[in-house]
Length: 275
Figure 1 (cartoon, rainbow, N blue to C red):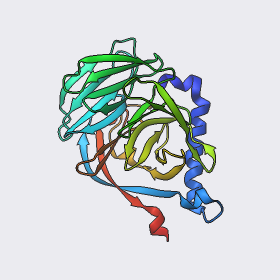
Figure 2: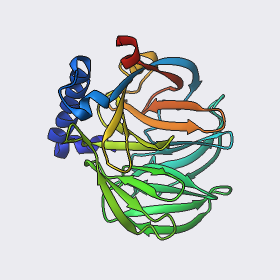
Figure 3: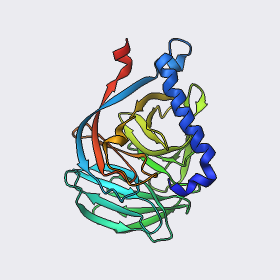
């Protein structure tokens, strides 16, 4: 999402940040006070490797496929879709959006790649190999993030709702409400589907939530506190955003808007360490 939202959605941002901090605090002291609280795991991280990223890229969507990193960026006049070398950061292929559009999340479905726009209700569909535009689709909500489970696309719009989308027609087919301890988790941003769960950046926090797509409940919380301090950043908008999974090598990649680094990380189960 864009920095322009600050003025109109500041309360939501503060609410999401406060909720995330409250969630983490609850997990530190949680015992058996509630069924959901007692089953939610929490993870820290260990940096495995670091790779170069464009510090001038307002990263909105991140995907890894067949040996390459795909990045969707935002800001009007700066929004684009790129295919890159993870190891060097070299841009191998690129297409730009019209300056009237603010690019958002991306997702690969077969031989196609989708790119959302923020408030224009427009979704681009490109040929994955050539980046030629194959179609456009209508999105009735705001566009923030996309994830694909092999059959269904999940679309975030900045609320606690994830919309289910038919990847052939882009028609909405249902929705799930994301909750922790029966409370809505808002400001869900960039998404990734990993091992049967939807992973979501919570905008303006250092938290990734892992969501059960059947119930909408948060199963796990990944606390990436301090990761932003390990990279050069370009201004106040340089917040955590970007999750990609390399299924072949079982690698987890994360980055942020205006960050100079993509990090490969391993998760550390803090729940086990405390037992």
